[in-house]
Amino acid sequence: MTRSAVEVDVDSPAGAAAALRSTHAIRERAGVLTQRARAGESQWFTVHDDALEPTAALVADVTRNNYPDLQIPFHSRWRHFEAGGLDRKADLLNAADARAMVDLTVVSVLLDAGAGPAWSFAEPGTGLRLGRSEGLGLASFHAFTAGLFSSDPGEPLRVDAAGLAGLSKARLAEAFQAEANNPLVGLDGRLTILRRLSAALSAAPEVFGADGRPGGLLDAVCKPGRDSLTAHDILTVILTSLAPIWPGGSMIGDQPIGDCWRHPAVGGPGLTAGWMPFHKLSQWLTYSLLEPFGWAGVTVTDLDELTGLPEYRNGGLLLDTEVLRLRDNAWTDRSLTAADELVVEWRALTVALLDELAPLVRDRLGVDAEEMPLARILEGGTWAAGRQLAAQRRGGLPPLSIVSDGTVF
Image (cartoon, rainbow, N blue to C red):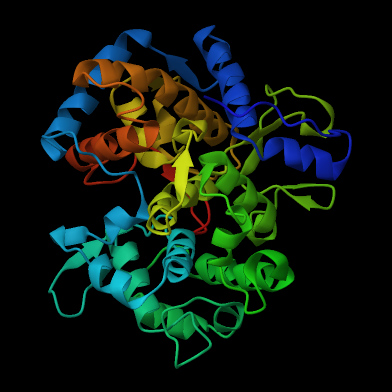
């Protein structure tokens, strides 16, 4: 199921921004670029449909190895809080309410962009040393439980606008154990996004309350008497209320549009023309909020309105299995940015091809879309298989080198 097109005035900046805050727009435009690549019109990639079935077989095998009983949890930040097989949330659930769990999820996801290959986090008390997403997850988890994001020493298990506004680079670096011999990519970008989050929380008390807490999302989405909602309902509130936080600079007039990038082959009406939306971190946040909303007694439906996540594990899977091939392999040796046309197209093809891969994986596992929505295929799944191939071939590095500011990848 996909979200229908948003009926807005796309000739106004506000209307164009609203139209691009939809997974319908993501899928529609990703489809245009994928059809174009299949027709041989892409400057960057060729698409090889004969590799889809072998890729589905690999993903199915990885899924069964990871989850033999096929009881697959959602692709979520909460998986990283379980690193090393430890259930860290159990004590937290007893000590904190659902809004605190939303607080933690929001701030942790926003700190989750790529850490770089040289950084790791040593967890106090367990001896675990982890890098990448698991390390970032544990670092943010322990920073939250230590009260780093709260302005109230008597209530450490919360995130609020004042606590974020008062956070220094030195304290964030200390919490993430970032130093000269343990460099964390995008530390400045992470601090910037937390400060922008603080400003957005303060600017929308109708959503986040007088204290500016991310946990206000629960009340904003779940109106009185409403015990169910769609995944896109959550995403829409996130994209609307947190639009100002993204420092990437993509704007239509005076409207920030976040994780949207220019591609000359993308059409569209009015001021949306030429923009390819992704909203990767916002969708990752939505996936990660499914469990906290569930703990609050809210049923979230229509999970497959969300798209697959266009990041370097899923996109790397498609390159490493040669569903996608670069026209010029020299690009693997160059540094790219999120705004580069090649990267925009890679991400768009990833979204569309994950939608095609999903039913093939389900067929091999003998399950249907209700049993295994995309949120579980990613976890089982495409993200895990992409990481496995990257570890085998390049020591964990992605197939393309993306310069990260800590806000997209």
